[in-house]
Image (tube, rainbow, N blue to C red; front, side, top):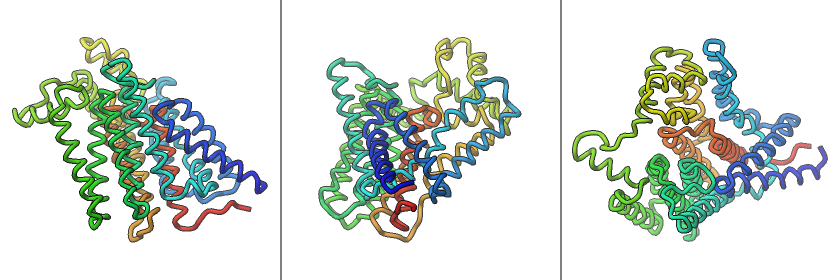
Length: 406
């Protein structure tokens, strides 16, 4: 490959990064196809040049997860629908392609590039959501997407922007706190409680890490504490007026009464109970994707809206029911894949960006996936692949600055 081809790859990397992060929540499907096409091109180039990204541990964990799901097929296959989980997770294959492309554009591997793109994406999502809300007064803003998917993607982008605080010592880096704020605003506007709780989980993981690393930065510590107290107070006082925030009111009522939420989601309850029953009925290989929702519908004819649902609205429930222990192993490998980027004992800005980003990515997808499908839904799956590829490229760049192979 000639030297100028790497200029083309660097340009393609820029298109991939901007499309996949800035437009992830405001034009998700267009962004997805751009990322997949560019990532596939990068994968071919990486294979041709036997690039080191092909040996990245996070990617091999994803491949092992796909292998676990494939192992269940001889025992559960009844039709082409049972192939859906593997096909839906196929975007994982482009992860090293994404990392290879990004390595050809050094400006994208500067420590502030990833958080800045995520910040722009979260703010764009929040502003368009706010515009839709003001224009229509709709209870659940969606910005051309499913409301819970819109809220979840905004949360991931917003909290991944937090990694920008790890870059430099400028007092202006506190502006990256706008990322979580924008993400939480989008989650509230979406009327979806799952993304809001996912955001809380990411804050619980990310904020203490930042406060520990920068405990001597009084301005940053005070800003984080004030924002946290303000967000908690807003959630507790506004919980009865907005659907997403009602989860705080329900939690306090449940704790006060010593019981469960007064308004349980009967559909989710039915699906989660069925997932447990299906897992226990076939704990090793599961039931196969084509059978799990049919079993739920047969057990609950009194819930007609189950006909419209394609999955159990929980990653753990889906993987447990469709794949048994092998499915849960696959899910665990996927969730843990970002953590394979972690290395301890270094203090460079990029190392902290990778460490915090890896922890936030794993936490976000774990908790967002408790109440809705994340893996297997195209926008969320592609975003995970892009962010993981980005972290792999950053990790590789800290060890030795990438140069195009000759």
